[in-house]
Amino acid sequence: MLEHGGRLRQAVVEYGIAEADWVDLSTGIAPWPFPIPDIPTRAWARLPENEDGLEEAARGYYGFEQVLPVPGSQAAIQTLPRLRRSGRVGVLSPCYAEHAEGWRQAGHLVREINEEEVEHFIDSLDVLVVVNPNNPTGRLLPAERLLAWNARLNCRGGWLVVDEAFMDNTPQASLARHGTQPGLIVLRSFGKFFGLAGVRLGFVLGEARLLRALADLIGPWAVSGPTRRLGQECLLDQAAQQAQITRCALASERLAQCLRRYDLAPQGGCALFQSVSCEQAEQLQAFLARRGILVRLFKQDSRLRFGLPAGESDWARFEAALSEYREQTP
Image (cartoon, rainbow, N blue to C red; front, side):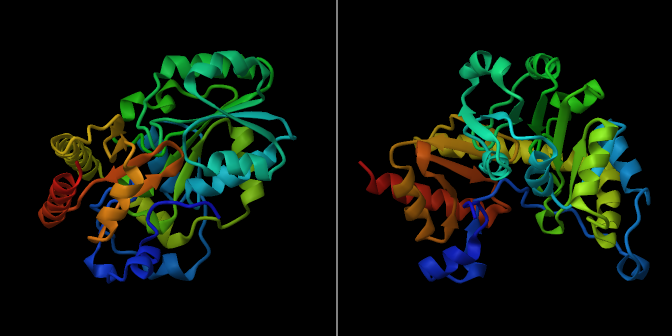
């Protein structure tokens, strides 16, 4: 399996620090989970059914008519490649590594490309995969550019797959507002923005025919009844959503300013994380871990991704560790 953030128990073993004593900044998950609503016994006792209110809530939240709930967007990332014959797939990189892995595992020829290379390769691709905003760089591509790429792919029967896992904080930039576009598939995560990654819920937006094929491949009862009820409640709570958007924006800007104070100016980021590239990335990651602060290291480009601290005590520990590191580093 590929390495991901949030592997706190592995860090507990490696560094000998109790789980309760860690500040976990290794994920891009909002550290303020939405409250869990009362879930009726019926949701636990019966098999889940479609159109119980979750799909309707998702249509309203995303502003998109065709939605498919899935057990986390990861399920769609692994299943979508099986809906096409082997072909040529471009993955705009660096990005969430499971995308390239999923297409390779399904027998496709995968080329990881950067943004400047898209124009050169796009007319030879069957599928282009883009994470927007990007993880881990935070780069947000304009909708107009993505729609133009989709048009070029679709004229040859190709797909543009856009993973919008970090889009909830900037809904105005989502491709969902442009409506159904042939060949366009949008993936949305639930757990990151709502701070409830453990429930394993996501949504796929796209053409009805494709969603039916994907649902058949994933199989029945993919999203549990309690998860469906919880998701519906969160998607309908507009006041809590706006409060979360505001809280994340303020914390992300505070995080960026904090990093700058210690000569770690972010090269990118979004409302749920900040991204820093530096030669000492591996050294700094280990230094923080020894003090019970977990951040995500991307060795391939010497990058650290910093998630949002949850409260003032976490901020204080983080700043103290950065200050100590800066004092010890010439």
